[in-house]
Length: 241
Image (cartoon, rainbow, N blue to C red; front, side):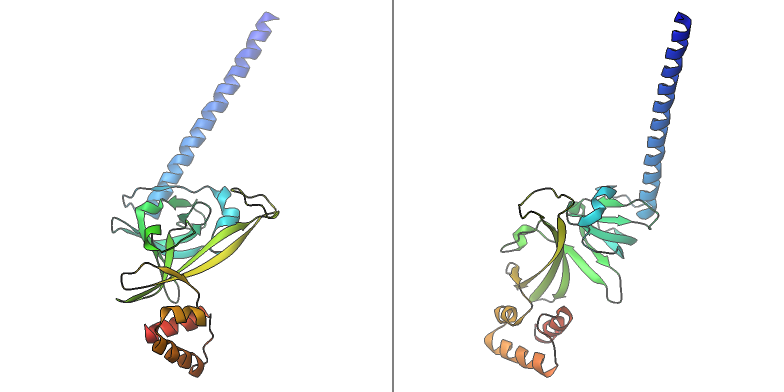
C-alpha cells in the first residue's frame, strides 16, 4: 500500500512539473511571438515605450469605431509607417497593430510627437499638454489639426467618456454603463493659449473681429454653408484666417 502511495505521489508530482514546464514554454513562446510581431511592426527600428495592449480594454473605450491605417511619429524623428491605429480613451494611449492577425500594442504618450491617419485626406494629430490650454478637462493628449498657419490654429479632440447607468460618478464602468463620444474644438491666435470654442455663429464671433465676422456671415450665406458643419467651417478658416 505504501509503495502504491509513493507511485501516486510521484505521478502527481510529475504531472505538476510537466504542467508547469508546459506553461513556462508557452509563456516564452508567446513572448517571443510578441517580440517578433513588434519588430515586424516597427520595421526593426529601435524605439522605447511600446508594450502589449490588453485586449480587455478594447470593448468600449476605443475612440474610433474602426481601426485605421496610419503612421506613428516618435520623438526621435522615427516614423513607424503602415500601422493600423486607434486611440484608447480609458488608458489615454495610442494603440496599434501591424495587421488584424497581429496582437495590438500601445505606445507611451511621452514617446511620440503625434500620428497620421491615412485616407482621401490625411489627418494629422499632435500631442499637446495641459499647459497649452487655458482650460482642458480631458486627459487625452492627442489633437487633430483642422487648420493651422502662422497666426491661427484650430484643433479638434475626439474622445470618450463613461455615462453611468445609475447617474453616479464612478472611476470604473459596469456593463450597464455606456461610452459617449465627445468632440471638442480649440483655437488660438498667435502665441496665445488654446481656448475651447464651438463651430457655430457664437464661436466665430469669439474668434473673429467684428468686421471679419460680418464678412464670414455673408460668406456662409452666399455659399450655402451650414453653421456647425465641420467641413464647411474649415472652408471658413481657409478663407478668413
